[in-house]
Structure formats: structure tokens, C-alpha cells
Length: 455
Image 1 (cartoon, rainbow, N blue to C red):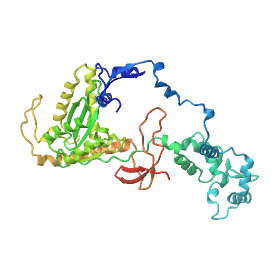
Image 2 (cartoon, one colour):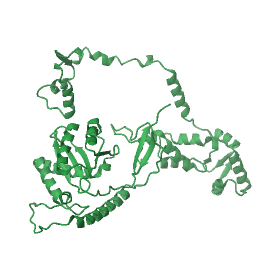
Image 3 (tube, rainbow, N blue to C red):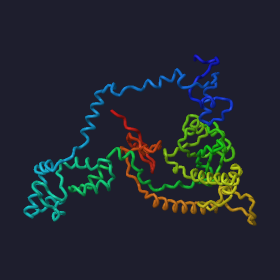
């Protein structure tokens, strides 16, 4: 409020700002939004050296002497918990003492010495009785650990966070007890640090989207880019016919997307449902209001799962391939995109066996390729054949995908705790979020979950 209506200078030691806010600048979409937000002010950006910037010392006041940092009770408590959570090395004397008081091992020692195993007792030890021996109070198969030291042994074996197989191999060279492998697996699976950096679990089997009854009932939309020319492509695919609409956009704002959808709806009519990802242009109130005004159901796919909107993602790959070819051949990518769309729309689709244009408009169009077939087909006769072919192709693709990715149904249910996948920011970023979420519901292979509140 102190700067409205006056001319002022903005002194900064960040040299790029001087160019960004100049008349010669050709900024990206994000920086353009910054410029627009500052348009009500009249100012000039002037560069100064950092040592002359009176605001710069504020960034250095955070450097404090670590020795002078006050230690709080919380810090002491956390340090105590950490120290006690690290198990100390175990001595043979300690194991022998605990083994002497372990009732199960006492019974096993007697059975080994007398070479008689009472029926129904110590079945887990009886299986390996020929491999067991006694030295003092110790039972040998390696070293058979008493019940009281098994958890400590597992903690020591999991130092360095080995995987399940490595931890089992490590334990087998030294110790043994019934169910040791199962306990090792449980420790690895329950280790929070291992969970957040582990590989994602096998995907669930593919659930193909059924072919809509009519064209332009279900459509998918996505943004692709920005390209080196700073343009972006707005791609819309009809799930019934696979017909593709592509708009070249300089700015990818929600308003521009709504305008392009308006133009498409003028040609094809309003769909019943539209599927998008969770891009900022699709999750705001403006887009939501537009969908409600047009009475269109808006479905957003699962976060970080672009294959859930598979039809659009497949088209994005195909379009990108043609743009790369245009770049290699030094040709105009806009012309190449136009040629690709003409070819694609008039070529029979691999799933339906009919060209997208025919399925959408119920007619054939003339192309540069010669043809003697000028007859029209009956849409009713073609419809069932199209559906059968589409179902067959999707079934084949599902089988291949499920086999390739070892897909299996998940057993998640309401109340289970999960770690959601998160975007990778750098090499050391964990694959999953640190805080667990609680599953609220599961519909197909999509889950709804919320972060647990700390009490």
C-alpha cells in the first residue's frame, strides 16, 4: 500500500531480475504470471552488488554458533530414545545365561542329551534334531537363540538396513531359532526407513475401460509440453472412436483450456464425462464451475499414475515421436503435426478396426490415397464388430501388461496404513512419503486415503 501510484526503484543483487522485468524479456509462462501480478506498480529494476545491498545481511543472521544452541528437554528425550534403540553386541556368556532360564531350551537340552523326544513337544526342534548339539547351556545349530534375545538379534542383524534375503543369509551363518526367516521378513517389512525408500509394489492387474456406447461420451484431456518454441499442446481423445483433437497453446491457463474445450464442444457436443490428471489447470474452482455449468462429470486420475488416463498418454507419445522426427529432418513441426493427425484419423485403429473419423462422424472421407470403395457402411452392423474387436485387443494388452509387470490384486482394506508415492526431487529422495496415510475406501485399483492425525 506504500507503493501504489508512485514511481520507485527496486534495488536487487539478483542480476537476472533486471532482464526479466525489461521490455526485451521473453519470459516463460510462470514468470509471465509474476510480471502480471506486479503490473499495478510502476517501478524500475536496478542491479547492485551484494555487498552494497542493505537487505542482504538479514540472510546471514541465521548463522549461529552451534555450541550456544540451547538443548531442550525434547532433544534430550529423543537422544535417549535413539541410544536405547541401538542394541549392544551380545556376548556368549549373556546368551548362555538367558538360555539357562529359557524353559523351551531347557526341555530341548534334556531331549538332546537323553536322545528321546516326547511326542507333541518341541516339534519345531524335532525336525532338525540331528543337527542340534549341546555345549554347556548353549544349544548349537550355529547358536540357538533364547526367546528373550531374539528381538535384539534381529535388530543387530538389520543394522545397515539389508534386504530380506541378505538379512536371512547373515543370520543363518551365525544363529537359528524356529521361525527365524519369518521374523526376519517381518522386521524388514516393518522397518519404516526401508519402506519409504523401497521400490513400489507390483501394480494391480490392468482394468481396461469399457468401450462407451456412443462417440464423444467419455473423453480424456491432457497438456503436453512446453516445447522448445514455448508452445504447449492441449490433447483431447474420444475413448469410443479414439479421435484426437489437438490445440496449440502459447499460454496454458485454465481460461485458455476452457476456450478450447468450448470450440470442441461446438463441433462434437457435450460429453458425459471428462478424464484429466491433477494439473493445476484442472483442479481449480474455475474449471470446476465450467464442468458444473455444462453438466459434465469431471474425473481426475490417481496422483502420479498417468497410465490411468491411458488413451491420452498413448497419443502424447505418438505425437511427441512425430515432433522429434520433424526436429531431426529440420521441418516445420506444425506441418508435421497436421500430417500426422490426418493420417491417424483416417487409418483403421488397431483396437476397433475402424478409423477414428468413421466412428465419430459415421462416414468416410476422401484422402490422397486412391480408392474405388465409395459405399457407406451400416453403423448398426459395424457396432458389434467394433466392440468385439476392441474387447479382444484390450484383453490381449491386459494379459501382456499383467504378465510383464507381475501384476497382482492388492489386499488393501479400510483402516490399513500405506505410504503414498511422492515425486523424486533429487538422487537421495525417498520413493514414498514419510508420514503414513490411512485407507478410507478402495474402489477397483484406486484407493482413497488420508494422513493420520497425530494426537
